[in-house]
Amino acid sequence: MSALWFERGTAVILVLALSGVLSACTGDLEELQQWTEAKRREAKPSVPKLLPPKKFDPEPYTSGQAVDPFSNQKLAVALKQDARQQNPLLASELSRRKEPLEAYPLDNMAMVGSYTKAGQPYALLRVDNLLYQVKVGDYLGQNYGRITKIGETDLSLREVVQDAAGEWTERISTLQLQEKAR
Image (cartoon, rainbow, N blue to C red; front, side):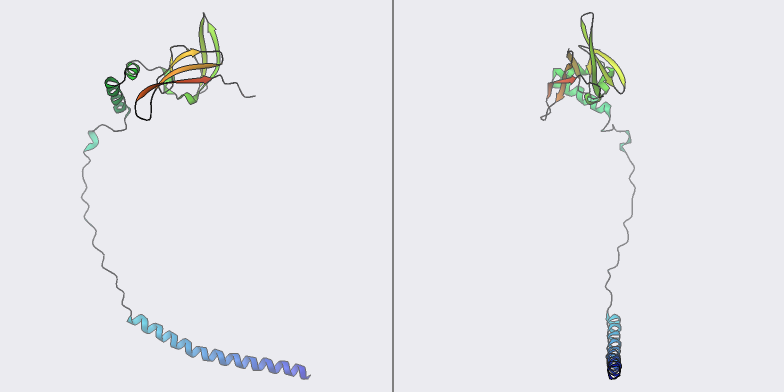
């Protein structure tokens, strides 16, 4: 029984000690709140006044009648002038009528076959799920490509392209026969 009384006594002493400590803190808390309020009253904000917004004066758009710098027509004119001045390769290409397969890049074309008819070789090209028959001398691709040779497994063409220095030069490209995936 004395052990139980000792435990209860210790608990009572502990509760009394904690209440004394907490009552001492409330005095400090009041003092802290008073100090904070005094500092708030003393502090004066220093926010600079905002300048009034500038008046917006709209300008009329006067370039509406000018040539669009990204138009295909302007590019074609520039290419024609460039061809007349510098390179006869490009001049001959710009003076002829474009063929339908020149609207597609070579990456969109696949050679799917070849055959010979009356001694002339032909190639079969698949473009946008349509089949086209081409022969030597036909044009295709977006770089003024002209077919120079058709073999059983490939097709060679000469393209006129601009190099890194801006000079027009010839380049030989090939399309390989594409076998259907099984």
